[in-house]
Length: 230
Image (cartoon, rainbow, N blue to C red):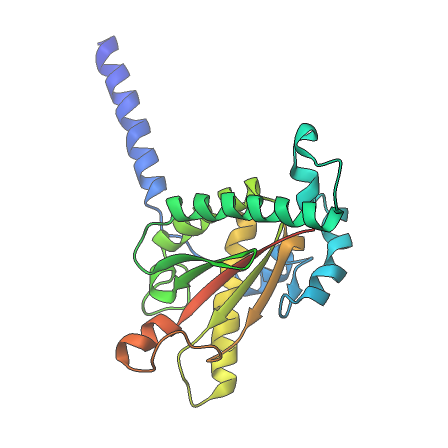
C-alpha cells in the first residue's frame, strides 16, 4: 500500500510538471508593460546612447567588461583601450558560442557584427501564427536567451522589431514596435534588468531577404543585438 501511495505521489508530480512545462505563454496586459520596461530606452542603441545609459546601468547594479575579468587576468601594462578591446573580443566570443550552442532551432540565427552579437528571431519562430503574442516555444527560446544574457551581464541589449514591406508605414511601425516590446517584456520576466535594454520598432526598414512570399516571412523578425559595456 505504501508503494502504491509513493507511486501515485511521484506520478502526480510528473503530471503537474508536464502540464506546467506545456503551459501556453501569454504576454502581460499591455497596460502593465511600462512596469516591466521601466528603465529601458526606446530608440536606437547608438554609441552616444550607450555612453549616456552607462551610468544608469551601473547604478542599477550592472558592470563593465573590465569588471568581469579575473584579478590575475587583468593586464597591468600596455594601453588601456587596447586591453579593453581584447577583453571585449574574448568576452563577446564566449557569448556568441554560448548562444549558438543553445539556439540551434529553425528560424533562429546567431551572427557576429564587430564586437556585437546579433540574434535573429524570425517572427514565426517565437510568436503565434495568427495573433500578436509570443508562443510557448518562443517563450522557451527567450528564457534560454535570458539565462545566457544574465551570465554575460556586462552588455547592453537592443531589441528591434521588423516587418515585411507594408503600404501603411504607420501600421508597420506599430506592429514592429509591438513585437519588440513583447520580446523585451518577456526578457525582463526572466530576469533581464530593463536598464540594459533599448527597444525599437523599425517597420519595414533593413530587409534581410527579398520581398517575395518566402522573403517576407524572413523579414518579419525580431533582432536582439548585444553590445559590450566598456
